[in-house]
Image 1 (cartoon, one colour):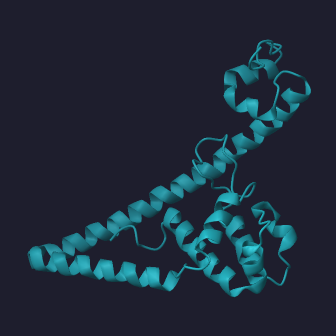
Image 2 (cartoon, rainbow, N blue to C red; image 1 turned 90 degrees about the vertical axis):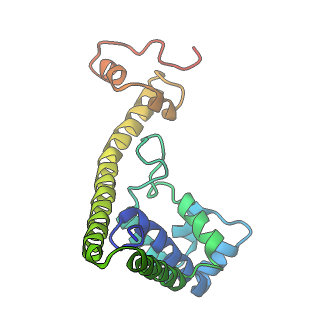
Amino acid sequence: MVGGAAGITSADHGYRLLELAGIARRDNDAAQFFGSTDFDPLSWEERLPERSAFKQVFREFIREYGHRAVYELDIINPRWQEDPSYLMDIIRSTINTADFGKLKAEQKEKYERAWLEIKDKVPSNRHSSISKWVRQAQAGAAVREMTKSVMVRATGVYRMIAQELGSRFCERGIIDEQADIYFCTWPELFSVLTGAWDGAGFRFGH
């Protein structure tokens, strides 16, 4: 009753992906892209023509949700705007079966079935209170997920800083690979940046 409500950011992702899969199925260019034997999720901007309806809508999705990621609170994981492979793989796997309208109808049916059960088993003088609690839970879930979205957007700045430091430290030979930066602590990084430490011993395996 709560999870199916509109306005919950994390749920919106799934709904939008189903919509995108449906759009891709009706878009000849997108259908050809997803069905190609040499499918490369990172090449969508290059391989999909501008006339593609799917391409335009997917761009909007990335503009709105591109700061999100899988296990997004760990800055080691790439944001969807950097690597949309996870999204593209979901769309590709559901392109022939996605039915957003059917999903919403099923959710509505479950919601109504739950209310019928409440009306059958709970005294009528409690119904208004339950309705109020459901609305409050929906609002709370929406705020919680939006808060997480904002927090993830902020942590994206830390990822950008870490990537830049990784490149610079790698060029200076302090670490072996850019990604090694994610295994360093912020105090260690600041000590190198301020000149308090030369980074000796930073390189993993040495």
